[in-house]
Length: 110
Length: 123
Image 1: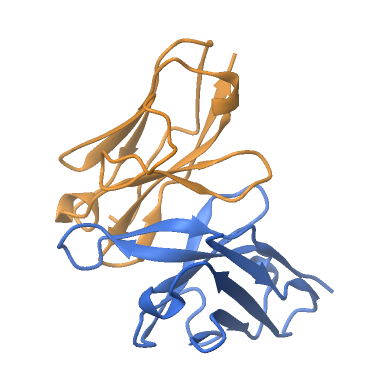
Image 2 (image 1 turned 90 degrees about the vertical axis):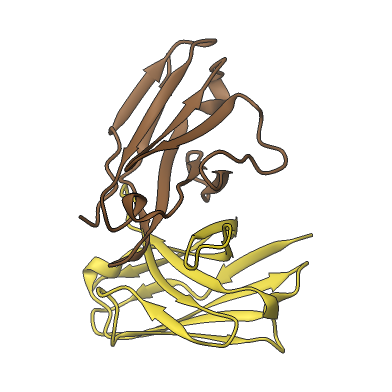
């Protein structure tokens, strides 16, 4: 199935830990393609946050963690800060669609 | 500074055309595949088209036959010719630099994004 499923929204208080899930299928994550995550702050372009399931580009705080297992992946954010309020997208390659994104998750910092 | 900058968006009537441009600087443009994405108002990200370093194009089914991606390595510029525009094509169009993770072919991800250019299709 050529879909990556994310929860529409998550929330947490400052300092807490939140996780965002990304569930795929046999034509994308399950086919062995890796998962990448992007952060989109309000009114701005997406920014690469995690690549290759677990790797952070230079400049991304170590509060952001990625993981992958089977046909799913997760993004964890620890020590939540107000500046983390944004939309988060997972992305993988799909045999049917090429670059495939999840629907996005809106993170609200309470 | 390493960056990409889109231009060429605007208001166009249904059935009309535009040419979007993406000017790259600060890196060896010819060594990278490049990609166009779009984001409709209030919606998520959608892959539109990719061009590899040899000029080979890839298109989403939703734009195949209407959009044409190209590149001019001498000008460090990526293009997207968008024809037969429909209301559903209304979106911010982003260009991005493509990288491949590991040794698996097509394990694409995108490390450098522009600020986007807005295309509005309306009569």
